[in-house]
Length: 88
Image (cartoon, rainbow, N blue to C red; front, top):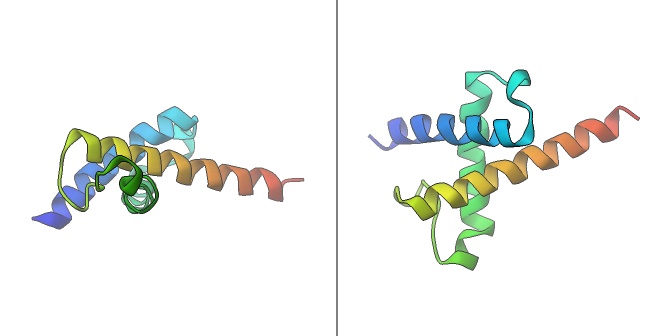
């Protein structure tokens, strides 16, 4: 059951993060899921200890969704920085 939650929440979080970062038109469903899951891991590792919360991998709550969303936005910001840097 945990993998289904990862896929559903990862897709939603990745989609919301891509809308925030303006990359929604460039990403598909699979990339949204990947960004959401990896963002949850990054958010749980970087931001979770600061706020005293985990990511969606630790359990589903409002704070864990916010931590995962922040991690996904950070991931997309890093990726867009490197994409812009390679175009120069």
